[in-house]
Image (cartoon, rainbow, N blue to C red; front, side, top):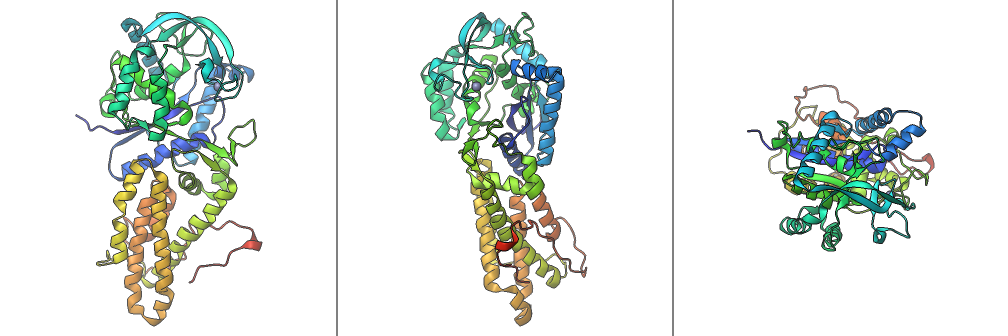
Amino acid sequence: MNTKKYYITTPLYYVNDKPHIGHAYTTLAADVLARHLRSRDIPVHFQTGTDEHGSNIEKIAREKGIEPKAWCDGISADFRGLWKTLNIKYDHFIRTTDPAHEAGVQAVFEKLIKSGDVYLGSYDGLYCRSCEAFYDESELKEKNCPVHGKPVEHVSEETYFFKLSKYEKALLEHYEKHPGFLSPRYRAQELINFVKSGLKDISISRTKVAWGVQVKSNPKHTVYVWFDALLNYATGAGYNPDGAGPDFDTLWPADVHLVGKEIFRFHGVIWPAMLMALGVELPRKVYAHGWWTINGDKMSKSRGNFIKAEDVVQEYGVDALRYFIFREVPFGQDGDFSMEAFKRRYNADLANDLGNLFSRLMNMAAKYLEHRMPEKPEGSEIFSELSSWTPGIQRSIEELQFGDALERIWQAVSRLNRLVDERKPWELAKKDPAALKPFLNEMVWCLRLIAGWIDPFMPDTASKMQLQLGVGKTQTAGAEPQKVPPLFPRKQEEKDKPKDIRTN
Ligand SMILES: [Zn+2]
């Protein structure tokens, strides 16, 4: 029997347009958690991918004069390219056009027709083409789609329904018994109230949409794109009701589905009800994070406030972006992305606090420790105190409180900067050389702690630091001291250049 892996998912991203920073946010969060768990030798499986069916995609592709699949191939590749740029290491990239997924969706549909949880009827409703979802009159905002703010259409068609209403009580019981299932807690109540207000059966097939998974026993229907896409979490892990693949036992149930708050209802209500209908165990947690606005406005290409992650990475490096988005706003809440705030944090937290601390200590260590990796310092107060912070930082990451972890890490960075300012190692070098080495030794070990802590957030920076700090390496004694290049080169206009705080 194989060990259960910690299974993390992001939503599948809809290939209607190129990826932006909002998509990157969820995927980076999954990456931070996955990297952290891997560093603790916990087996992890991290799945992301693209959602590729539906009339919307077909329409866009036709407008561009290409086949839907060719369009999907292109955008799906853009997503994979961005994940590479952002240094995201996933284990599996699933596409809803993958044959194994499509076969799984078809088998699920047939199974549910047989069990009676899916039945044929007809639907009259208000439909948002962009969401590919029906809305209740009461859910509309000024008669428009609550997500897109665009008019909805009246649609009437023969459709299969999923018996969502049947699972109302079971869902409420599940929420009650598993208080961590809907997270964070401040987003849970809205969903619980929605379920309590009474669930209606939902339409899950279309006769007017050709670009989708066909219903096997009634091929004029294609499966509703959300029903299709939600199943990826199970099919990607090898699930098929006609016989699951060998990985399913080691992956299922998913440990956390990371989602944006706009799709919390799909993941917190419809998805668990689908699994109940299939007799499959529910995921352990669905975690809904907030939205990024850009300079106070909702991010959207049509409004022109669209931040391309690639541009930020090109100028500031991938780690600066990875740091900023988790430091600036608690994961879960809404946040605002402004380049001013980004630059401020880059210069203050990264170039100044961490970058300077590291370079001034490493330059001295190169000179005075002669590249010999020092012994672990016995009786160092600061080292043992900071070491005791490790479990708290780990816990914050595991609870998806990334901002808390980074705040704590930067408290340690400040402490070390203060200590260096107080002890003035550059003066010790002249006045008290015997005290210098043990002090630098302590500092090197503290920096090793910091490098380990930031690794899930800033893997490149952590490796650069670890290389200098001799983590996992035997350093050659007596090597020529090297000038350490700055981790985060300062960015600013010459005229308001702050005074250089480096002291050696
Ligand atoms: Zn919409």
